[in-house]
Image (cartoon, rainbow, N blue to C red; front, side):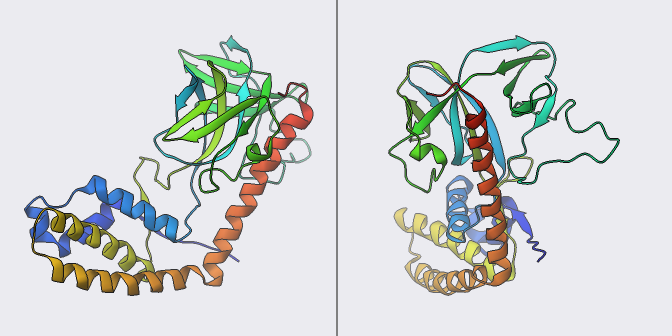
Length: 294
């Protein structure tokens, strides 16, 4: 089944809300930064967990490192050992964490073991040994760090909204927690690789929301409710408007949740979980082939 859903940016959503609340907008009573959190919560309520998979190496200092600003939840993580600085991107096969089917070159083709695409961080299988892995980190100036030793990492005291990853069940010497936007570790210094799901955003970093008639009103009424709540707290007499919006919000939410329970939308969720299992498969493959674990 082919599944395709349209999205729009938060700014486009906000424009529609400000058209309806033009007077409040002109009086400066609308705070976009507060409303981004509301739209993100609606995304989560609708089960929109098809985010961009991203990779980064965290530099641990004094037992902690700040997580990326767009961190949504963790796919997997491991501690990196020593690294070597090289002047050229190593050749290998980039592990595609959202593809569970290995690439098979056609007869006569050289195959994928050439120069993999790597933005800032990527894990590759090396050319000379298909069971050997390298973590490559671009550090600027045409230089790369290559890590070839890894230690398993246990993630503890975390809920499944932040990490339902294999690290929860790891029995490892190195331990980490995800707390208040930081990764807090049992070791003082070092490097930790994380594969994570970034916030649902476009290539320019703008938050995306689902664009569908059954869902648009849910987003819009949720934003309107927060605007009016803020006005109530500021002493404005908008209680009647707030009651009306809250009533419409309940109906709009029911309509939106009814839509996301349709077979087409559930198929999209199924694709996400398939990709999720592929990510776990890649994680375990690394440690099956590597003797350096903790």
